[in-house]
Image (tube, rainbow, N blue to C red; front, top):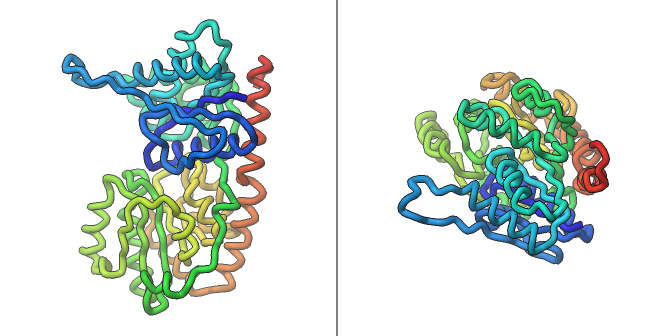
Length: 376
């Protein structure tokens, strides 16, 4: 199949999932055309992978550049020149809207549209009164709709009253890449020179990730045992987190490492992964940590209970309950037997439910149904 994929290129779950999916489809022989404003984060150029950069027009008349129109124009151009069979967009606004326009630009090309909903496009952006109607319209114009968790499907139906069927396809984890690798002692000693426990958090540091809670939890861990915190990512909550670490007296034990391309290498260093988000539509970072055999302590919110079985493959605590998360974290770090049971169960859960090959097959089956005109 000739498949166009359009997504956010920046650091975050939706773009990461779209990129990983596209690369996996390319390995299976499909021709994948990425359409984005810049090369997506994690995209590795290889056979069957093509990139089409969206041209953004700069003109003094436009106080705000009409990026949706630019995106639609590039989608339409790619449909026509590459003879795409299908366009798969990730995130409702502006991608599903632009795709609808692109299909109207190419009425002689029988291209099908698949929209995958990722979370804040439904719970935040789409709920803005100025975007609600266009978000609902754009979703409903798709030939097939998927959501990355049952929780997100319910949110979409309840908030937008979408009558179209929505298929749940979980986010894929590349278990050949996200695997715990042996770490030389000198590498670990760069961050924990005296054998301290290594606690880790990875995100785009938006408010929904509750990054200051990570620091608060770590401060309580640090009060009980020697530990270091590795913070990977960047975003608006980085400075508040740094200020809080200084205020709590733990800044000397915290490493802010910024965005990293090969996060799996860092996960192999970790003894514990903290993920105290306000909500997650799925929780890809948690699933990737589990694949790298890192025990996860997270919030019981959104789609995270579909990823982590509490007490079995990780621990879930109420949102904002710093004390409970700290207690669970200390328990895992001090009880190696418990940590081994959690990591073994976590790895098995990822392999059984989120392995990339199985997820890609689900998408392939859906693509064939859509192209055949069968109901999804």
